[in-house]
Image 1 (cartoon, rainbow, N blue to C red):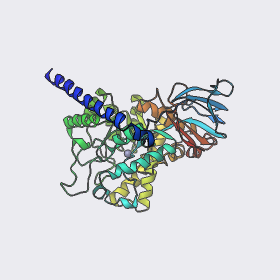
Image 2: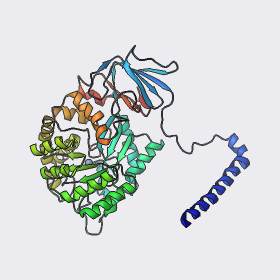
Image 3: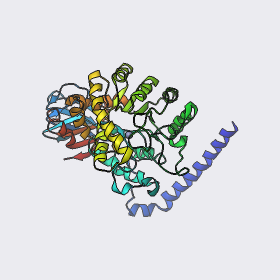
Image 4: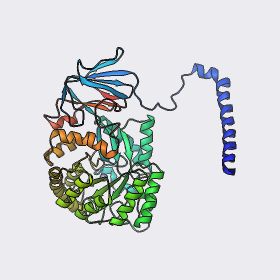
Length: 459
Ligand SMILES: [Zn+2]
């Protein structure tokens, strides 16, 4: 009671000071302000205003439903309010009409596996970035990464792991407040992993990088629970973990199990209790099964998936986020000498395995959500993943699109608001040239981007 009384008094004093400052500005400085343009001190949160009507040749609504020819879409403020073939939809009198021509309208795409913060793999200036780059560097360049991602038609991302001091949470805030254009972000803070594992910083002398639970390095259920709580304290919407070894880390085997079942179970229990899902990086056959049995919501990569693992994923409804772009990217990096030694060997091994894994997952009807691992590959090239899902995985063009719309929205838990071009959803809408059901490469030719009713790209 004492504390609250003090707080109330404190607030009263603060408010009085504020009132004084405001009065001073209004009375003493009013004339100066009237003569000088008022600077735009803070931007407006980017929300569409008024009615917009979109016309196009085709529409794919993102649920897997048949194409609509000659569609009309009505957007009111930031919401989709009507969708249907021309003639079936009543158009508001004062709406802005936009006829986009021979394009296909689609819901804004969702990439469920990005790393917007920091340098992209293969950046020639990135040698020893961990010790050379200033702490804020990764956050500053992430502004451009976010812009490129949005302009490529990705209006939502799930960012699964970031370096720095919650730079990903800061980027999310900057986008939401309207300082810089970018996708809606679901973000994880630091990835959780065991000491010396894929999510730790390895290959340096002792004492140089010894991250703790704050940076996601946690051993045993107690530290893991503490680390989950810490990430959530600073804004994590989802928990990301490294269940097995990885390609780009030093000194660990890519297929080796890292966290035990008990550790993964403690993480999932703590995250779920706090209403967060867990995304598990897992290449290795056993690590995939441990993570699925512990209750994670998605397996990232899944390179060495076997029949039993695929069956378990289907039974548990665990999504596979295949990140085929990353497999192709690290394979290229190994062949061109950007990756050397063990990392190059691991890249070639995992890239060969994931071609089998994606076919197995498709054949077993494992739910698949689109994700690229952008950051391993350049931001803005995300839609190349569609080609790989079709070519390597044997998915139909429509199934590959649904992986990046309704499936990804369900994995994020955002399917009531995004993931389909249907009335009642937020107005996240893109247009791509021609017909992506005839040629999946057309998804890379984005001519129009609207997010939350605001147009970011129009050609
Ligand atoms: Zn990743």
